[in-house]
Length: 166
Image (cartoon, rainbow, N blue to C red; front, side, top):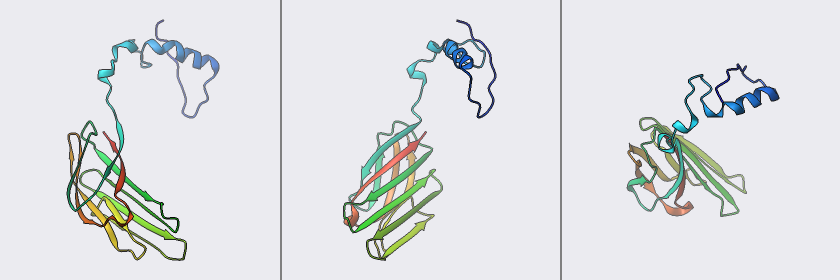
C-alpha cells in the first residue's frame, strides 16, 4: 500500500483512524519518500547504547572492551548493600573530556558521608569520607574506554556497571 500522509500534534492521543493509517504506512517512511521498510537492513542499523560491567583489582590503567563502538558518553554506577548496616552508592559520568563523580555512604546509625569530584568519573568512599576507589577517564576507545585508577581499596567490592552511548 502507498504512503498516506497525515499530521500529528504534540501530546495528541491519535484516533483509531489515525492509528490505522499509521499501520498501513509500515511499508514506507512517514516522511513521504516512499522508501520501503525492507530497504533498511539490520546491517544499516547501529547499536546506540551498551550496558555492561567490569571489575577493578588494582591501581593503574584499566581498559574496558567489548562495547562494540567508540562511545561518546559513559555513565558508571556502583551499589553495595550486602552489609545490612550500610549502603554505599556511587555514580559518575564522562564524555571523554569532562567527568564527574559522586559517592555516598549511609549507615544504620547517624553516620553518613558524601562527596563529589569533577576530575574523576569513579569514586567510592567509606563512612568517614575517605576515598577508597577513584579513577579518571584516560580515553574513549574504538571498542570501549580506558580508566586510570589512582586509588584502590577492595573494602566495598570491585564491580561497576556502565552504560555507553554511541
